[in-house]
Amino acid sequence: MINMLETLPIVSPQDLTQWWQELAQDEQSPDYYELTEYGELVLSPKPTNRHQRLCTQIALQLQTQLGGEAVMDGAVLTGTAGVRVPDVLWMPPPKWKDLPNTPTVFEAPDIVVEVLSPGNRKGEMDHKIHGYLKSGVKEVIVVGLTGTIDYIHPDGRHTTSTFPLTLDLPAHLFA
Image 1 (tube, rainbow, N blue to C red):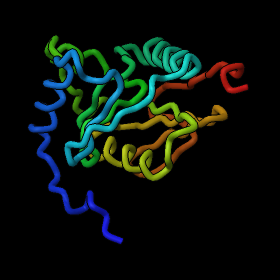
Image 2: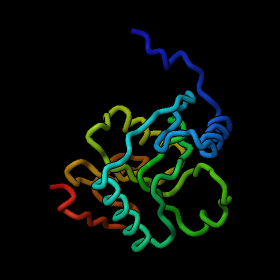
Image 3: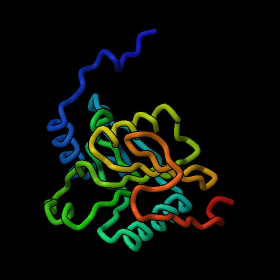
């Protein structure tokens, strides 16, 4: 069977960034979306309270343990997967000072975090992770449905972070 996406041309990073900025300024745009490498709009459901609570805990722990800043739902221009929106991203202070105060996409934050939801598909998540790493992200943290934590570096999956970081997630959010 032919995959129709394989016949579409991949959109340039400049065009993806421009489309993203236009969508961000359009009041009619949906709240939760991403752009594939083909420029297709991918809609996501609104996150649950549990999901948002986990993301908040992770963002606070990243900032507390590493300094710098962490934000939720920042758009990342990936190397091969379009513009994707990890649940949390973190960067040290020097990277933040060079960013404009306009709707933008981040290029190669040091850490991105994906908190899995029941609807996540393994193939799509692997594609996003590969895209993040290809763009220069140093570490992708994946929090599983039961609270497992994988630290994914360019050389593969690990059980610990390359950063001085130990995430302690509330067990009651996984019950």
